Image 1 (cartoon, rainbow, N blue to C red):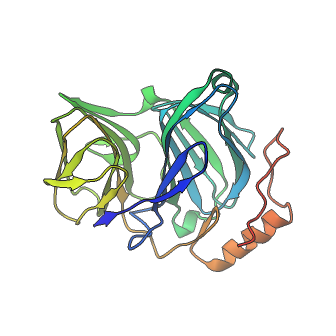
Image 2 (cartoon, rainbow, N blue to C red):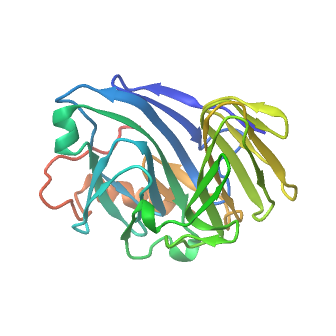
Length: 284
């Protein structure tokens, strides 16, 4: 099943959104998948995502180029660079911002990365919020001629990531040289392959750049690069029921989203220390 991106031009950069989509809202626990850039920012410019709230999910940021400065309502201030992982568990509610760091804003920078949301199981939806940063050096890897894989979260390929997860899942960054191949085993029930860059074949079928292939369960697939390629692998067990998604909120029941909307509108979320800006609740 081929999942096509919804493209949004934000002026300075382009966002290609794969999840939630049609006919797949989720792949395992993954309910949101955004491909940011690549984009070049001139000196004095950058990204400023003002403070905004989340519930019922974990956000996962992974960069190929550039850097973000993360700040949240827990008081965490953390820079993320290519190959690192920022995993923020929203649970019952958290607020955060993401901005281009001052040094890169002054010099100009390239930005390219993936942002995903992982839906939390029902028993963890209202848990206390938390944040984890894992540097590139702490993530397990596989290396073969022409192939480098880094496990961002979960378990796969005989590896276990240090990132805390709440349901069986995997998320990995795969780099392939031209002509290299990689076999993806049916270790997890739901699996998908995303072509971030390069010419990629899945069992001999072309996977267009910025598209996702949702794979049939139970069978290994052969991933082949016809050029140097960056590929994201993801999936896991199906969620324990459907999820509603509205703005930055994810929940197994609509009432939780309505309560979160009221809390944000009334200023009842804890805010990011030192920041006064925020994104208002959307009209629709």
